[in-house]
Image (cartoon, rainbow, N blue to C red):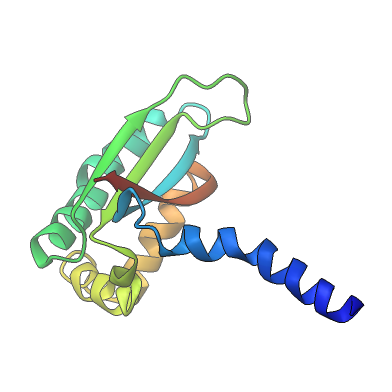
Length: 145
């Protein structure tokens, strides 16, 4: 009898979850955006922004043209402390499925800018002299119905 009472209690407790999951969500899942938080090294803001305006821009524009990404943005931020970002970079993808095989598609576009992987690595080293990546975050837009 105790067993039956426990089963009835468990079934009753699960009822709202079943009803709630059967209801339609008031949103659809939209584009996914990768957000990078960057802190330029002292005296390197203009040099870094020059790199962003040339090499990074060429790479991002190539990815837009190839359909790899929907778009990208650059934001200047007034840091609240020395540990805060002063630049935020975003890259927007159609959806989370866009990340499947992403490396190969990005590398194909990158070859138009840097002829070899060695040139790409040299560019990465040069970039590291100008800034520090404080972190990255993946966010997803929820489009209300």
